[in-house]
Image (cartoon, rainbow, N blue to C red; front, side, top):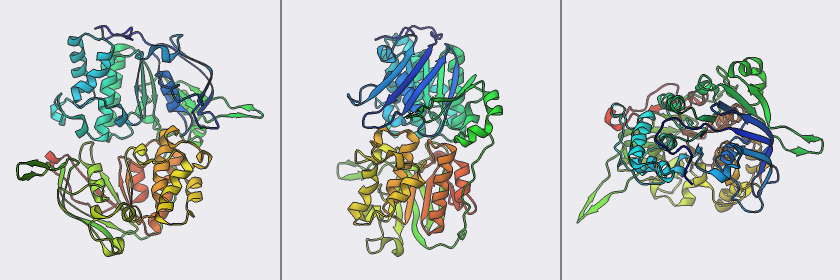
Length: 525
């Protein structure tokens, strides 16, 4: 159905939101993801939604976008949730939702077509669509040639995770919805990209007057853009009544000044706050060499055949030399699109090198050969465990407990670590839940736990702290610190400087190929 805001004017009709005792239980879950929500948001308000991992923030955004309610008869809704006095499911297109995983929002193979997709479905005139596409891509930094922008026919499959986040945001901005819903929009972006995306959202709001609800764990990024902070807390029915969903609600300065201690206790990343973590107690160098790369060139594309000639792909990075040492951390940093994830997947034996080598030392290979890419799956997961940027790509069962036991069962190991992982990573209350119904932060912790359950000597983690509140972040960082001291090697692709500081070790910074790539640098990450 065409949106009422599908004309050519930049100004839209901002949406109003009303929730009265609203709650939602996902199919297969014993308790509600969000319970007893009473909340009114006026047209044009800009709201930052905070709360610990698992408080129901993403569920609320999905409901506002009208995309809940199709999980089958086992799902359950209570109370009332309205957008402009109407059920959100009755007016899809009124809201634009950017989800935590931008991979799920890429629809078409070319960048320009993907941005135009939403506006086309809202029946925006063709000439207006392409004006909006150009403007939206400029706003999110994907068409700025000085910053390495892309043509409209650039393949979406060639974008990095952070670039796909910008692409998803551009598609929403081109729709010009009356309600903009952003779920962790800057989580996988480099520091410059974080500011670029936030400023793009601000420009869109200034132009259109749309209502904004943004979920973000770190307050400092959005504090000056919003005019209201709402803090949610986990709550469920109990014999003595129920816990209301809203813990705090007010203007940003008041909420942050009057309730700082309450917010930090709830796991909110308030400005200037970094939670305490377990300090490293192990040695700072000299661990056993487990993996090494030499003159490594990497790409996600495959070689092409032209007649009798094999044409290798153009590498996204080349000339990479790195060492992975037992009990030491290697942190891979750099801007979006520099090839960090591609390097990590190649190091982990999941992608073949374009050229150069990845070599496993005898202490890691243990008779499996020196090339991890040639190892069988069973050999690989017991030696190198990989946590993908998108947690859903790792899930293979329909229950959290089964997910954790999958690796140990297939390796013939005991399941001694499963209970510890459930407790340490705060997943114990979710053992019977479907992994796909977890919050983004819970999915990330589960993906880390499933890898740890197989006891690998090397961990390769892509954005491991994505979606974590301050409390779960501290627990995860402390746990990895313990593993490092016990001799496990941790390779992390991350933009999280505080996390890098906790793990220490060595930083390997990659720059986009046109600017060259730095070699591994000695010193603290």
